[in-house]
Length: 440
Image (cartoon, rainbow, N blue to C red; front, side):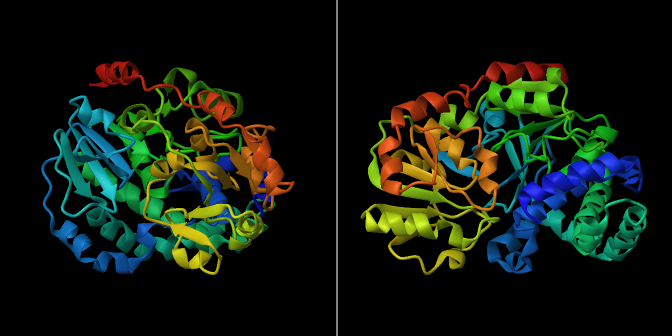
């Protein structure tokens, strides 16, 4: 199902069915189902570390499994391993504002570093230790969950697409329920005062939030990427689930307006516009040295063929091309391109200050590039580019529907910087301190 078809399907399904009936173990799972189907349409389902069992055989991972962490602190943070070098230390690029300001924080990271990071005011617990249990349990309950899902959706109208993908959905729901069962016990032993999340809508985090909400533990999501009118993790006309975080910390007012105007998931008083910590504090704002380079950023949902035309045009123009692949993709997908440097091991923010042009179909990097003064070329591909329609103009973000040589002459980097400020507010630590003062 194409992405535009997905949104039409969800809207119609919600209109004609009683969503209150979509429960497993008394947990309404409709929002989880919506996000799961979106991931399927987006080809971003289980494309992470835990899908690859051989990763658990890595010697560093084995060390982490044997590691005995300290007793957790009052503040928990569930996050991918998003560590960058800052002041001689590897810090979490989204959440370093906690330990940096003397808030002792327990980071649950996947995959974890080895040796384990030991910065001041930080405890790191490798999620591999927890993932083994969750994966084991989800396999045990999967058959039962599948039967329950069939019973639930067989009573629904317009159910064919869901029933076709019931095996796929049962994997998500099994992981969700297994996460709930694990963290119910874990929080009885180690109950935090507050929990932060990078990406609240991933399956395990939704399970954690469901438990936290039951136990009246405040939960906070940190914006980590693009939010638009069709982001199912944040945008929904229905709000039946108990697995949505209470607080939301955003980059800028643009995203707050998007959520308030299109969603019922978050209360306005609990949406905090605090800016982007990394760009405001860690990113080195030294003068940027631009090379005549086109940087293309990819997405798992997009086929290799989407980039062939622009790469061929760039080659004819003798314009150097670098392809920054999404973290969940492999280099092998893009082998075969001529005169293209494939990049998988560098931070996007290290690349953007050094290039003149950026192209993508719908990656979050389109708004980040503007912050760096790099204008965008939006590549049309099967309607996915519509997720960036709010960016498109004739100066900073141009749709790739005319010759590349003409588009490059139209792009204006100074205007890109101005537009980037619209999406990213300078970091405001005082707003975080106010929130934590109330809770702690």
